[in-house]
Length: 127
Image (cartoon, rainbow, N blue to C red; front, side, top):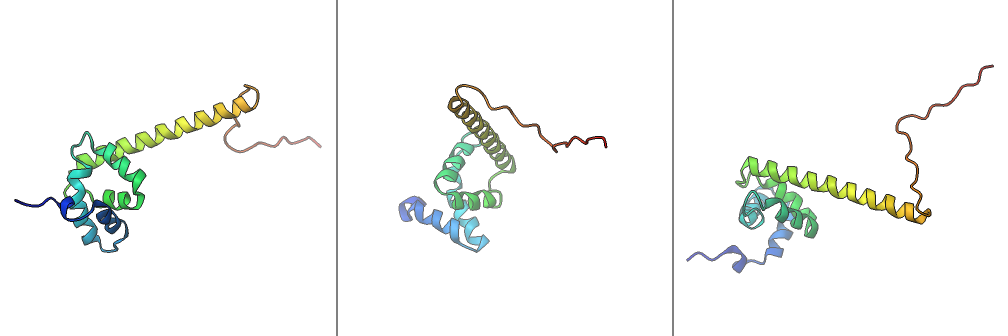
């Protein structure tokens, strides 16, 4: 039978190649090898890609850039991108809320007043 790639080459070596190779054709071929591992289905893809982003950010960036060219369906790429952005927005909001709560606790339980957005208006005195 055919030997699976992960029995012939360590995945970490492929991720290093993906992260650092300058040739697009090489990165696309490596992405083709990794595609079914990191995007086993449209439903699971974003979780696997998120894990890859956390563990190997440069390789993940190259993987995402090459996924469509390596054969991943456009709808799957779109869904993964949407879910990743949604997750990042949610995580950012959670972090902001935690920071505001920590600041409020540090100030004796009083929340810091929010600053008005936009330009600060200066009052002009009549001469």
